[in-house]
Image (cartoon, rainbow, N blue to C red; front, side, top):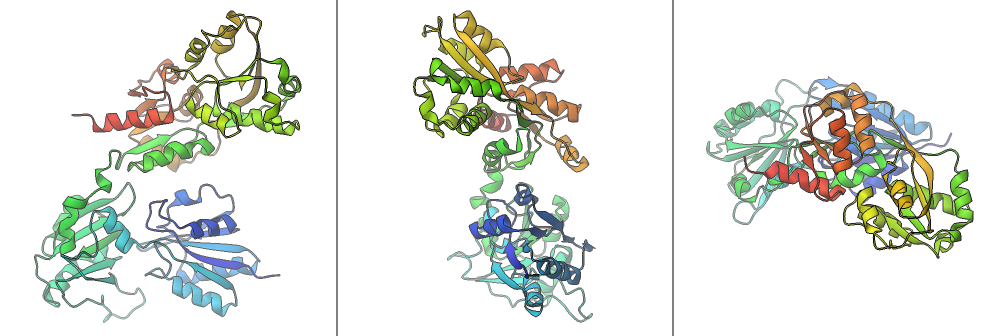
Length: 498
């Protein structure tokens, strides 16, 4: 059998946007992803290949390093492309060099994809530049613990003191007291040398404590910080209060649940994460196209007989145009039609197919779309309304009441996704906010989780009505009934005066 190929890939420090383009390509090509404790699992969600967790945290190892090496080799010998995903950079205190040696000895081809390392990115997110003309013209990086298989005489390779240098200790949190004492007592570091500790750097869970070599142990205990952490020593730490930015973001540290479909969640998730939130994607609906599309096919065959096409969701747009193309037609078949959409998100989806909507209402609900037709003569006009089987009848009935002949054709429905784990449900239970962008997401969410303590954020009045119907309070309702509107409403709630 032909041997496979191995990518040794740096996943970056934790923020899922701090991964390289080449690393993403290696993930896309993988038959198997072998990933570590510090590789953000969000990076893996979109891939359906085999995924094997081999994380090592403190003394808790799923596999020994020798077993990890053999696993990678075995998978490659099966002819598979293996992406070995490691936190930070694979060659910086990451055992990547040892894994590469094993691959060479086994005759397996490999490539190294460097990653952003935590020793400079975590301080950057904490507002601490590791070099600065007024503070440090050099940087020294040190592993903060001894080899597990070393002798009793092995110790940290402590640096010599230089006031113009920054020192970064990786993986030294459990050794913090020994490190600080040794720097003072054996390397003559001034006891008042500034120290910063950054845990879970670049993630919404990031926490920072500052002090001096003499006080930092107590500061860490007071703050309750735990590994993984970067220990930064040097006067650059004093810039933290002036330059901190990440933990000053409006949603920093807030745990926010997104209930949209997996495909649609990315837009709101990215917006929330870029504002500092920890996002939990917990899809409560799955879009299911109707098995029988004969009604839509018949309508498309006589498309030129319609005066209006009305589309009420991005899903409707996508499924409608999929069927249009399957029928052997394209947008030219709609040349005689005017098009109305329920809101800007649906309109933007329509533009992707080469059509600009004629009507986008001021209020992005069925009632708002009906009001937008007030200036149109709909008497005896034929309207094609492809929509969800669960859509409210308000729009079809309102158009018919204005004299139109409405063909409401169900082209999709929603289903409850399966496979929610206890861990996911527990994370949702500890959330600060839960966002709902449709009444379907509300109904299905409470079928999975019957009660919540988090604040509920709704996209608009129809969704809010469903929340209230089920006996829950709506803490936040978007003024503009869009994803941007939900985000703005959550921000306003987070930053409002106490």
